[in-house]
Length: 118
Image 1: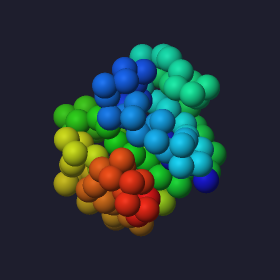
Image 2: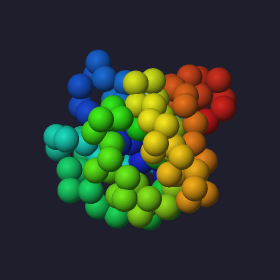
Image 3: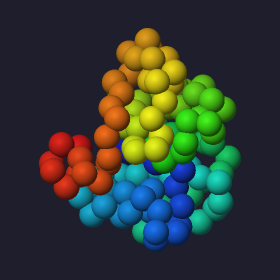
């Protein structure tokens, strides 16, 4: 199973970059979608919104204002859960996801990893 990072960035200051590195360090497989192409630890950042296989978790690093265009894309990935990192919380999206049987969590991916709760 894989984690899909929405809002991936090659900027080491961004939390999405830190999450990608930390997920890999903890043995998780990742897929990356962002605004700009790039690469993190050999994983390409895709800008074309491809379909991925075996997505367990989507971790959001995109603010709620920019999320509506992503709803259908994320639902097509059929994740088990969506993590809304600080600044990405979106009650509307969370309700839609829950109505489709997707678990939602307002949490920090880095904290979940550090505390063994991921």
